[in-house]
Image (cartoon, rainbow, N blue to C red; front, side):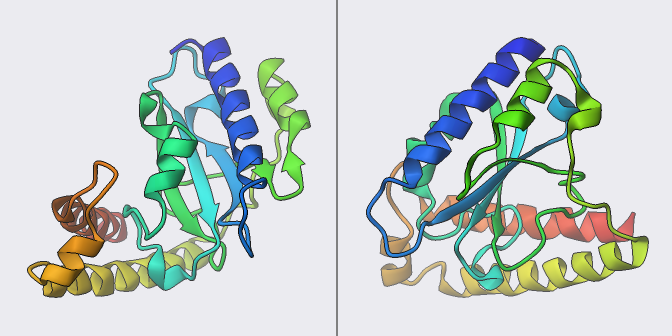
Amino acid sequence: MRYARAVERLRMLARECEETRRLPAEEPFLRAAYVFGDLPAGADPLDEIEVALVLNLPPEEVAWGTHPPGTAWLVDFLRLDQGGIAYWWRSSGEPVANHRIREPVLFWSLDGVESGVLEALRERRFEALRGVEPVTGEERAARAAGELEAALRHLRAVQGAYWDRQWRREHRGLRRYPEHHLWEAVQGYLELLDARDE
């Protein structure tokens, strides 16, 4: 995808995120959206736009690499499955940055669209982009260990419940099946395990 097209697609995603605030809910489900990777680095062309979407869920419900409960509608609403966007879910109760998400730049939050960020991207003023503060190696290792532990707990929970009829019924719908949940739990855990060993 060409750089200019990617910036326009990110602008559309920011508007779609803003629309989630209009949905009736006690607390907004989507809290913030960050871009990272090739787009804020100025790559042209780029394979995909990488975003991290922060949810109003506790960390134990947002295991790395998985689709937490209640996100299937958000994928449809934000049109994330229409290609060109790679996305990861994060909990509002934990830092956004991790082994994969480096120097994320906020482009939408409950305060609204970060139009200054989108303009800086459009104009290729990368020095104007302020990402999340980088962490020390010690902090990164501690975070990775915590995420790995959470991913293993999630994997065991999914594996333990996989053949339970009620669990399978609850984890089916909107083009998602129990197999997706098991695969994501395995994939997320193995990715974190590899990151720890590097």
